[in-house]
Every structure is written in C-alpha cells, then in structure tokens.
Length: 273
Image 1 (cartoon, rainbow, N blue to C red):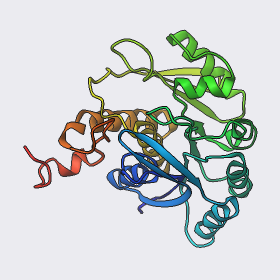
Image 2: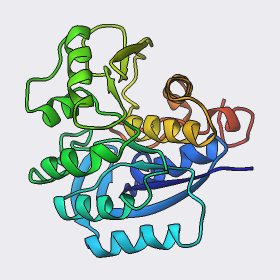
Image 3: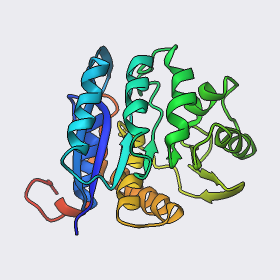
Image 4: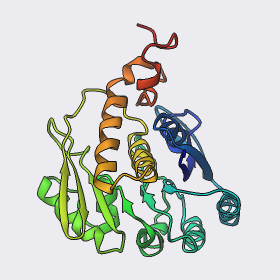
C-alpha cells in the first residue's frame, strides 16, 4: 500500500524549496504527496522578495478537507508565516494526534529573508512543538527558538537539542550544516539520548531547499514504517545524493536547487551528460 504524506507549508515558485520541494521528495521516495498552502512567496534562487500569507481560516479549511476524505500517514510542517496560521494549524492537528508530525521550523530563507513573523515564535514553541514527533531546526533556528546564541560546536548542538526537547516534541534533530569545517553532522535527541549522523560537507552553492527536502524525506520514511533514527539516516543519505547531483540541473544564478530525482533521471534524456 502506498502511503499518503501531507505537507503544510509555503509555496516556492522557483520549485526548489517549500511545497514544491516537498512534493518532489515525496514522489522520489515512493509516497503520495498532498499539500496545504500556508503562504505564497515571490522568490527565486537569489532570494525572497515578497510573502503573501494565506488567511488562517482557509489554511484550516484545507487541512480539514484532506482529513475528511483521505488517510494521512504522516505530516510535514514547513513555513507557517505568522502566529495566526500557527494557531490555526495547531487547532486542527490537535484533533489528529495519532498522525506523526515532522516539524521544520522555517524562519529564515537562504538569502536572509524572514519567513516567520517574530510574534509567531512563541506560538510555534507552545502550540506546535508539543504536537511534533520530531522537529528539525538548523543552527540559526535552534538558537532563535531558545533565544540564545547560535551553536558553534558539537557540544553546543547537543545541549541545544536536549533543551529543545523540553518544549514537548518527542524528538529533536538539530542540523549542523552551518558549522564551520569539512563535516556536516546532525544530532538527534530523544528519550534523553543523543544519536549523531555524520556527513561530509559538499562543495556546492546548490543548497536551496535542503531543509525542506530533509524534513520531507524523514516524513516519507516515517510514513513507510521506519523507526525515527532509520528514517533520519535514510533521509540524510537521500539528501546527500540529491546535493551531490545538483550540478545536473541548471536553475538560476544563486543558490540552486538540489536534484530530487537523481535516482530516476540518471539515464533519462533530460540529464545532459
């Protein structure tokens, strides 16, 4: 049986991040993807120039429409834009606590544009984080949630992961892509234990949508029945391959997207040798 995964996130018209990246990831990993839009953005590989939030009641209506008709095996939450949308999403999902939730607290775009209103951080931490099976902040996002400086070491990452777990989510994956050095480690905190996932840092600027892609891949793995640590490991391996193959694409002049379909397009005419 093919599993169904719902993304609740914003739209990226350039196709590299947001809902578009989520749906590509779901398709690449063999699950059926669904999408509830929280915001429209005007963006490309160079940055975000505008954000148009969807009315909160309509975000809730979209989610209700899905649950009224379709089995949902996992949920990925990305950009929620503001406090009212965060509250609306929390209100609906509180009625569906049996569905696992991967929450990627999207706050800042690659180019530095804010994607979450300042007043939404408290709603995010008090209303949405307790509903999550796992949250997947990068180092700036973890620091913002904790109102403290960004982690500069593995020790800082581990401490912040354990601190974030106190907000009520079942587990926390702090991503170390912003650490200096040649490695890109992530740390998973859950049940008071830490699990590290290692990877080499790849020399590329084509990293647009990596956070969206990783969290969606984790949701796909959970929906397919993988234990959380296995879902994280599989998602990290998928993302590493997608980043490594990003050079196959020619999209924009800034931070280009990863190659979500690296395993499917390898021998297709669309990939130029």
